[in-house]
Length: 136
Image (tube, rainbow, N blue to C red; front, top):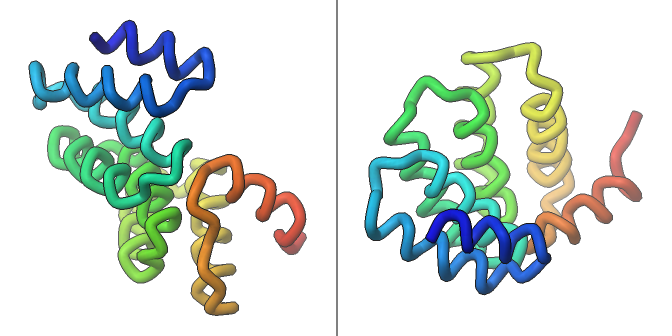
């Protein structure tokens, strides 16, 4: 089920990918990779609250993973939950301050916290927004 989900993800069919990954998660909820990928698919298709659920579960399985906390922070951003995103990204950076992805996510969070605008709902929309609006 995980593999079928990954194939759909690679083909750009986020809804089908998420469906298969959710099934895989139901079979094995202790696998952080399944929870992570389900979260990423949910982010891709604009299901921020679903992304948060899976990303949070992944951090419960591997609480020391900086990358999983960064993913949770990103899921919170896309769900419009900036305060929670700030807490998650700080945890990620506490675990690995040199991670450039986490640093970028922190800058995105600070951007939305400062200007009060609602963030985009999908990863693609956020990437496009950030390309146009980031400050050097």
